Length: 283
Image (cartoon, rainbow, N blue to C red; front, side):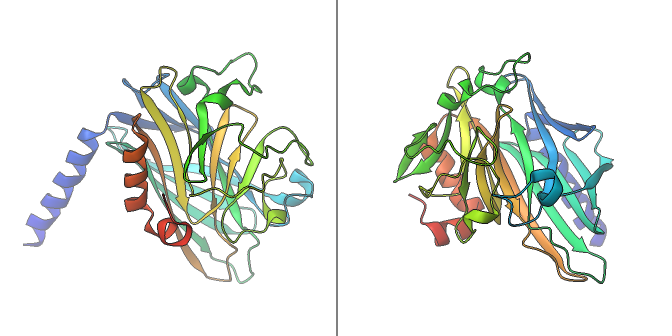
């Protein structure tokens, strides 16, 4: 019976990977999604860009906020459908990342462990998704462009809102960019880019492909902020919330790469992240 169950589980895993149009690779801190039907051909992600402390909005990014870390590839499936990465922070925390290509994008399952006898200040972290090629508005010779904003969106006031949104902020310790705090997150703890005080309806941030046939969106649970960056990037930055000695926390995330059907995206997001629906009221 145990052998039959094992074969069944293996068969399900192989079937799921065979159905995915995407492949995964990781090299020198860049996670890349590949796909024959993926607009732009590849989607690079600086993974992980940084692990961060709180009190980040008004303080020096390098001297105060960033906790140094290294990332290594633990394993990779032959069919490029799954990767396992290990991040080791300078304070002794480890974060294991299981990253899986799925039919409608990529899923992330994380386990953060504090193996030490001291509390860790790690509060949040940044996966930096580069969407220049996907939107058709990136320029390899000029990475810091805001042309892709008109293809990018969040959700506010019961509808999709393209960037720049109302109440667009322009002043901060570092500019340009835009950050929205997740529910319950203090504005002093978010990225030191311009802070937008208008709340979002949910934890999704995304963009449309160059020809508007596909959309990309990303979400994490728990999440710390939504962020539009300066290297044709969009972030949903996940929350860790500190780790006590020997404490373990689990975090999950999703990248959606799907046909341009916003109601279908919202329905799938509500199924994947029911905590957000209860807390924020997805419309």
